[in-house]
Image (tube, rainbow, N blue to C red; front, side, top):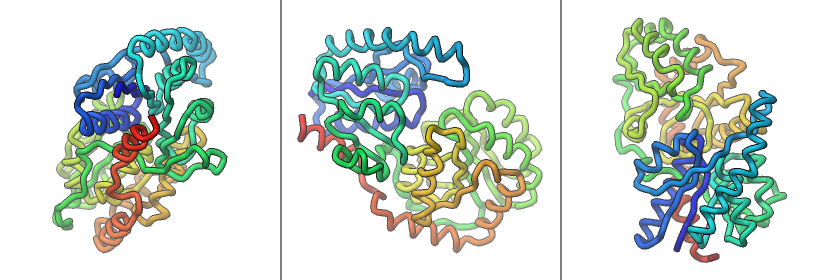
Length: 354
């Protein structure tokens, strides 16, 4: 088969795409695979590193906060569709899979115009605007979470594709050194970064802790400098591809609630404090977080309630009561979606339908 995966922008979209490409390659090494993204997204680094071909189009999000950027992004739409059309006509895919992000819309739309088989991956608990618009062209929508009944006839719920490196930890958790992984996705989360900076003196008082902190590129140096006053072991970095090694060591994760993050936490059995991005489209990170919190595998700390005091109180509570973490891990292990390889279900379904 010849397969195009389109999307990108953030590691969440890209890693889902890579997981799907990996499964296609695993099931049949003769499959021809292509990723289409933009040079502005993290896909320009991650896709070649994963060993796949990538083509670029000129596309960007419709940023409503800036009139100038909105106009420019709108003018790019017909250009990106024409660019996509050329790539699609030359590659002649059997199926085109949109995983979300700037490139997904133009590629899926141009593919639909020439009658290609369209599939969408909806990673969030609330379907995004682009996928809502494109859903009419899709043979099937693969969803990570239960979606609105409006799309029920086209939805196949299978969980979220996660990288093969994400595996349950075999390590017996102990409270000897309490290890925390702080991150806000591939691009970082300024509210979380700055809160931790202000909380370092309080964290010093907890004693016997270790923090891994993924900052994103923009705040990396500022956060790194702030940790100079830390009296506990710490490692600060802008991004890591060795995330499973950290998940294996972590007793607790403090993070945003992107779809990839939620399913990585589920599949690695790590309890978490989730701080949803309040400006996420349709507040989808809140509903992503609620899915894991309702199952008992996480607690939610909304950004309006986030402060150095509330953050350290949450961390301190779990550090002093390891029984709570054990109970949360047990509840994660009982989740129906845990351990299921979404990418395997996606690839098998596409092979069946195409």
